[in-house]
Length: 180
Image (cartoon, rainbow, N blue to C red):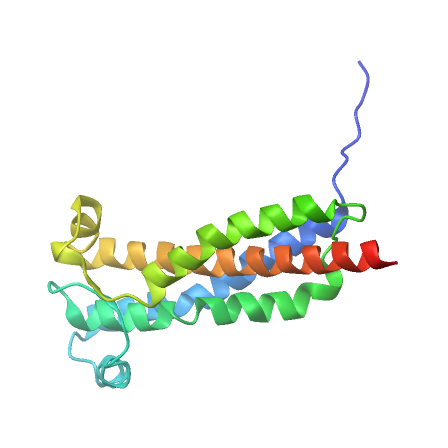
């Protein structure tokens, strides 16, 4: 039998691992909020965050307004952490040379059409989860489902932001290569 070599670039795997490690580390506050709430539902710490976030658009559940508002407020930091990852990793990102500028622009435009509405819906729009559709209503039924839903929202916003910034960098690199 013939052995085949892996064609993977080593930089891609390391960068992906770093992105997911940062995602896990930056998701820990959501779990801390959940643990604090489970131990003390009238926590001054959570009340402070809740009072600080009044006026922000939030996804909230009338079943648990304190926990849902605090977690929703923290989810708004996901694009910031995606930007931090991008800034830290920009020099280590293996962007392909020779990518067609038109393909890169089309891909970025299509991803923008997906990215912006998702970010608006999850970060800039207020919604009562208990009055929403079936899935959102199910996710707001208890604290465990609520925590899982906010972890998923946070992870999605973080990953989409990180990938969007990488796509913008790839377009810039393609434009720079075209000019030379």
